Amino acid sequence: MQTRWQSLIEAIFNVAVGYGVALATQLIVFPLYGMEVSLNHNVQIGAIFTIVSLARSYALRRIFNYAHAVRAAR
Image 1: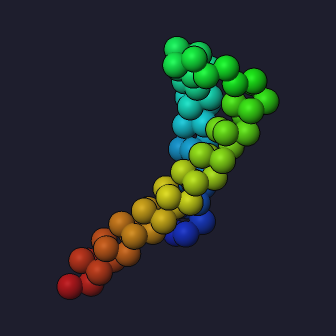
Image 2: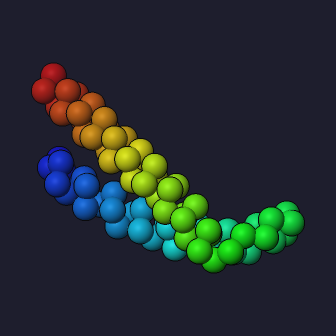
């Protein structure tokens, strides 16, 4: 079972990789839909979604670890 710290570290690495993929995707996809967004705004949009993703990833990891602990205690 992971500690809370290990869950946070895993979530950070997961989201950091996701941020790079998301930013690259935005730079390709936005223009295809006629959305001209500056690089600075793309970075800001990506950062907002990254923060949300980090919180989601950490919370889900903790929920699954809790469920695993409850099952193991039975």
